Length: 64
Image (cartoon, rainbow, N blue to C red; front, side, top):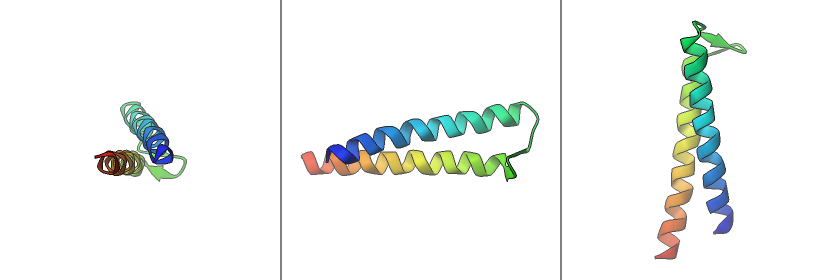
């Protein structure tokens, strides 16, 4: 279970960083970054954060 807890924390931080990067690029006036649309970067960040939440949920349900 410690692995899921660490994985959830890492996924949450990576997801937030991806979303921040996507917003910063879009506010800078660009629609693409490295050949991908900025919306794709935001969706990837959201997906990684949801994965982190599911890892935390698995840890919480296992503990109770």
